[in-house]
Image (cartoon, rainbow, N blue to C red; front, side, top):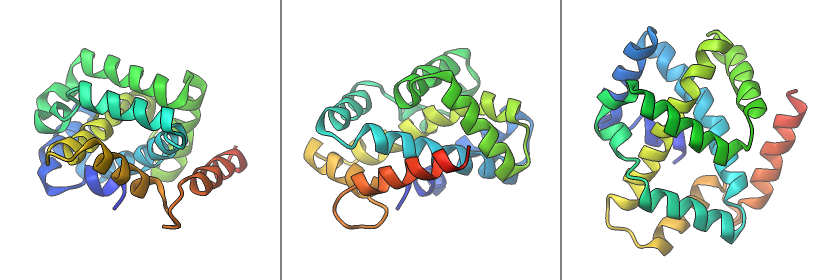
Length: 178
């Protein structure tokens, strides 16, 4: 399972439709955009979660943020507050706006959508990612230990029990793509 699988879960289909309508694209384009942007967000979350402090910070955010509302109540995706919270999330994940611009440019090459449009979509996708993670991890009554184990599995792409090598590989690929 990966973040894209969580986002495209059938229980989130209304959120995907709302996202498409909000940005004036069809659902196929919306899914392409979400998939591409979520991949970069996953890399950033993985990088931030490679040590216990980063993992704890993510868990704290998920436990206190009520992020699941972004996929459970899709009508709020169009609100300015959602974009603002998404930008705050991006600040934690990427650190600065230059990374967000780079992510949008890369996604533009992958999807054929304009980088400007993808830059506007990115904060909303960030809220949807956090919403899907929160819903998966906290919705089922999982303990913090179980949830952190789920995150480790989510970011451990080669299933070797460590996400550090995966995060370093992602960072290398991102560097080479520049």
